[in-house]
Image: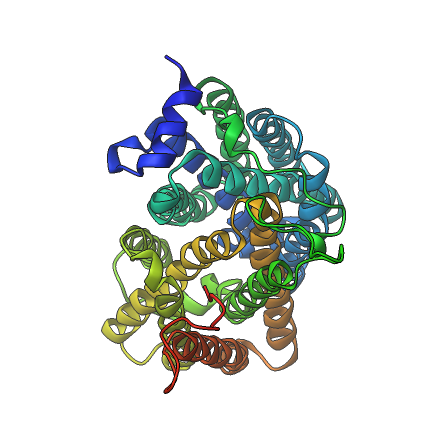
Length: 438
């Protein structure tokens, strides 16, 4: 069977049954393994801290450092590897990720664990950038939201299954068991990527991107004006994408300020509900998976509006964390609301960014996505650690919600501006002289 021809047909027709399901499921497995490996320190925070002889706040900084490495390395690594077969890139990066997890599992000191995590973070950044861009290349444009949600369900299941399982294993045996499991799964998934995932169609690959991302533009549009200067409209697309990405990252900063310490935050509630904290983490993950699945059904033209509403819901959920411990029923309801709101943000943002950037910015957007969210993770983990060390865990919800509120207000302003730009003013026909907005 000619895979390239099939993919070309799917991109033109956009039919539901044209999605490359085996490839999407394997790429979803990649995101599952990556998220489990990334979040493991949060799930085993008390046990890992005690064994390595450091404070919980210092172990929390492993999450911040991980995210910082992804932020710094994702774009350069993605640009370095952009001419290679993305399947080979994902396979190699997944193998390195697995080796990093094994290194963490055998670490005898905090410093050794830190080195292993840095290596894994570099591989993580390249994995996210490559997977994101490959998904956008192998699916019909009209089906991008659905494909993104399928792949990100794997990431959500990493929270649903992997993180609670690691927490249970740490309680029953040892925190290192989770890292060994990620190492084995990573090796298996690396092999599956090479054997199952379809290649990018040749005609879906855009023209080479310029060295300066600010000069990047869709291949289907002119690259310069008549005078040889870069087209202002093309630059505007990148600026619009970076603005949305930055605000989504700020939402994640508020979220991860709290979620980095989710185990101790839910500790008192866990004492009052069946299954304890692992059950609450499982509930959080299940709700997240449902939310990501629902995002795949959002019409593409509604993506930005729904993202704005999800941002407002994140703020409300974070603010409500101050009331944890009032009653088990209300605490469980809060976990549900927090999970649903935050899970929707990454899928909506990724779909919107690829829509704004177009084919010509695919590799750049693919790298911007992990940079955005890992910058949010890094800043959030650092903020959370500073608050917990400085004034205590009970004060964490206020700054977390405050940071997220700034992003939510700005997203609402962007959405209002978009709506106004699409509404014809008196005395002029619809669309006349109005720039296209995402």
